[in-house]
Image (cartoon, rainbow, N blue to C red; front, side, top):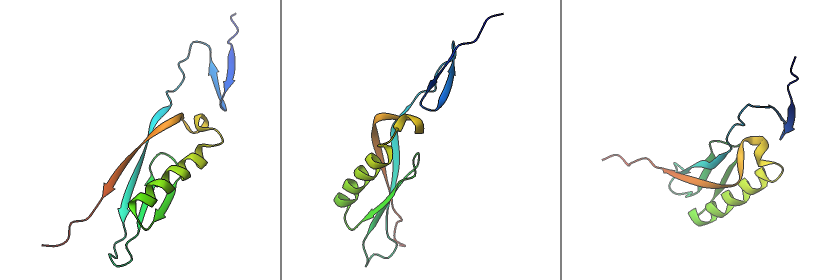
Length: 99
């Protein structure tokens, strides 16, 4: 009888001979402008991790998003299935005004 070896990595048990799940190298975030054009603020919501932030300008939003993701992944990104220095892909979602 052969004993199976295992080792613990980032909260997961890996068995000898089994492939480790690949870590995500990209985090996707959706940016939306507030529906009320007068208040003019933007929100960003990440799809892979629980990060949401807002700001009054797109430049400030990108800075807030970067900081929020960094803080969220600070403890252990690999435990969340995310690579240590992921790229952030930002999608700007907008609604066309009625014609």
